[in-house]
Length: 147
Image 1 (tube, rainbow, N blue to C red):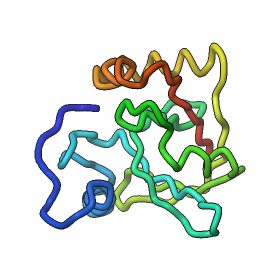
Image 2 (image 1 turned 90 degrees about the vertical axis):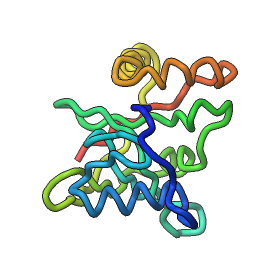
Image 3 (image 1 turned 45 degrees about the vertical axis):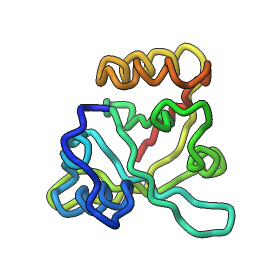
Image 4 (image 1 turned 30 degrees about the horizontal axis):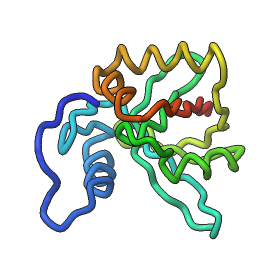
């Protein structure tokens, strides 16, 4: 990820701090990690019907927004991956003044297309290159969100 610029506020969950910062600053997050405006909040449906809000680094182009399930380089997928795999559409919050919520179609990338987008994530941040070393061979799922 882009370089860390601070710590998590006392008593606040890391992801919750990112969500609150995102919403308070038009989608720009520079604390506790410097994402800038390269982040989206994905409303992931859970099996029990509730929604998990996952702040996820994103890359955008004309085909949509791409998010990667890097889980900080963990050898296991983050839990939200399975919710996205079950969903045909999700709501995403995107940077703007104000932050906007958009309904997006979910597509998991495979093969050469997935590999090409993964290369873009590694160009975006050297943190993703480092994640490859700690993930024990796990290929990080990448999703295109079109909305």
